[in-house]
Length: 279
Length: 277
Image 1 (tube, chains in turn purple, yellow):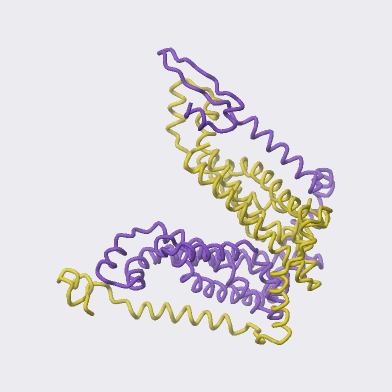
Image 2 (cartoon, rainbow over the protein chains, first blue to last red):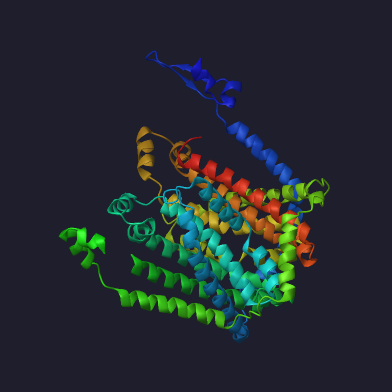
């Protein structure tokens, strides 16, 4: 009787098939959930296609337009390069400041958000909720709001990137802290060290490589992301991209993309080098 | 100090044998600080002006006093419909992206196709990922015109890049021993795929798709800023017109929606990782 009550709702509606094996044992084979999943999926697709006005015809009719645009993007206008340099440096500066600030601020918050260091349940909950809320808004929205408060320019962009980095690095870091070996920490505590001392000596060496790795990953992500912040007026390459695309100067836009691609690739290589040094 | 005195010699020995890399650390710190100062050099910080402070106060007031009318407005301008639209964009684009990513990721796996073909397809997905989604939206708007449909197409394309990157590593880690065992049992090609390949890959593929749904949901909110449908469009409108209590209502709903969906997707992915159905 008790075993029957534990059955999920699905198995109580669609009774499992009862199979008697050759050796006399019997097993219950639950009905496949696949038809139900497919049905739900199909309904969801139909509803969302209706709400979004999905239309294959437009796609087929106008697809050549995309080919034209992409064709022009892939023929970058190299003489445009000198105009790219200054906003590009602005974008990189913005990402550096934002990443460093975000990563540094995330450290104390991550410590307070990890359940094995912070034994205070309500505080843990509050810190985690704050981090979740910070993380749930996209960086463009932050940039937009900061542009209103601090005025147009790279400062708003740096701050937006900083807030975004804070959210993501804190989450990665506290998940990391929670998986570390707590033995050394407890040993230090039994020595009579304070929480801070033992954290510094026993936990920091364990999380540092991963933390730096996350920071580098974030930096790469930020360089890519900060190139769009200009759209809302937060400085950097975005202003140029938006301007060129709205003027339909796709060759110039292609040059900008090529530059971003080269920079991101270089940073990626640099990060790999630093990572190999850390390990 | 007292610890050092009471500690036995072994501990002291370990303590002193720690490599002395103070200079190296100072150098790294100096480089990082130098980079930050250089990065800040060009930033135009005019300080918090009176106007800026007023705006900040207005934003805070708006966020704490959201316009409740919007929350219960069931027409096309109300928040319930906008949320449905945003989730629809994210869902449909994840579905299309995940479906398109499956053949592409098989074609970019070095253990399935010859290396040159694999690298060609990898280069394509890398290109897709380099252009930010906002820029893709600006390009697609020229093709489809503004609206939610543009958001769906944009996100489908952007999803392919990331989903296939995750799928490739799953395909390249396929355990071929299972296939050999099935061969030995006399299974045909179809049976080998059904019982040897699909069970190994499905959990990763589904998990990646759900993770991407999370990201698409967040992205769908910003695509609206360029006119690609979803909740971002009225949000953009409200910010541009400084109607902060509308902004507050939008942000509040956005945060709640994202947190709930993220929680659900984490639960599903955790149960997939454990192998439970």
